[in-house]
Image (cartoon, rainbow, N blue to C red; front, side, top):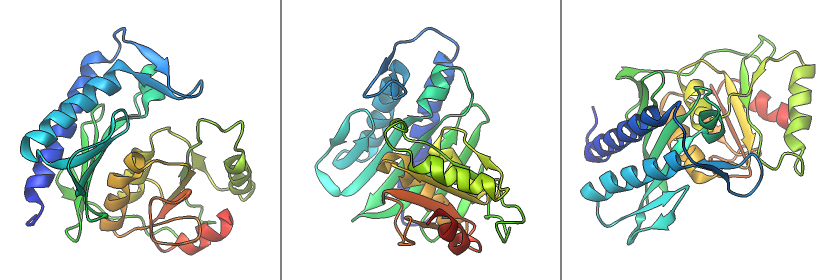
Length: 259
């Protein structure tokens, strides 16, 4: 039962559902789209509207907390209590009408991830976790898979940075995985990839270059579902140059393949 962070969880759920409602309201309609840094790094007016609504709801309940959002950066007084927000993870998918995108909201206290909420409005799937209290999908507890070894074969997922033409490291890793006969999926929404590891749909996942708002919520959900999250060297952090998440039993083997 949720105790210490119940208010944080409830506020995050309310904010995630509100942002998801904005996603659905604009889906299929004309809206502004522009590139932020590279051709594939898109932002829409829906990203901006969703983040504004999330910030409004978070600050209504926690007015002094800091909020790190993908669109507006870090704002707030109490940096030790920080919300980490991706208002629309999978913007490229959303802009093209491909229904794989979500809202991701994490809460950190003194740098430790305490609450994670990821909401997929197209499937009405709400993934939640509070540190030490398990992970849930629409209120039902979830667990990672038990698949091992990789050659079973495990179902893996990955993603690519927007500057893949300049940073081809993951192309080499993908080629290595495929050469081993491993099925690999690339859906385009990191927070959902992590949640799919948490509920056993994927056995493992890796990606280069994620930002904190991509991984803060989903990584906690994986860990609370019994999985393991590390950087490419096996260190227990979701914020390294590479993130690796798995069902734990094949984590070392997955790390070995990626090295």
